[in-house]
Image (cartoon, rainbow, N blue to C red; front, side, top):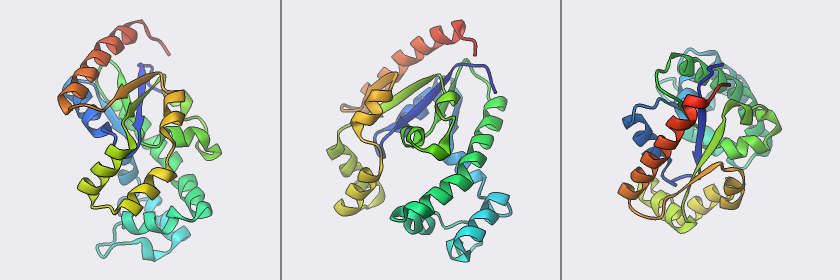
Length: 211
């Protein structure tokens, strides 16, 4: 495992994580994205995609032979057993892919963007998530803003958006596990400035850090 300081970036859906990740990248910090890794490990021809077809059937495929992520998400959303099976298949592959990317990344410290980091910490199948990061950075915002952004970004109905939020960890749960908390209640410029301030702090920590 890479010995550099690792920051686990997380937060609820539509909380502003992407803006924070982009700012870290602009500052020269490599961001290892779990969503990117998740797409890589289920690309056409991969063992990950074959495992999903074996478990969930060919109905999870799109017309081009790739994974229909929306169809798979709908399939497991209200089926706890199916969701656990999906996590059991993909989490080890995603972790391995993120470690591969981390070894190749160049920068003073690493940001691991893991949207469901807090949820993973609650899951027995995701063992070791806390050991993968040295600090947890949570992007926090009000639920009303999340609902508004989901409607604008994804076209989600109020019912769909509320169901998505209900399936994730609460703001209180995230705050309880956060080492650093970024409040995204203002403008994008304010959020980016807050990232700049954290970056200076992390640079100082990174110079003194050894895993």
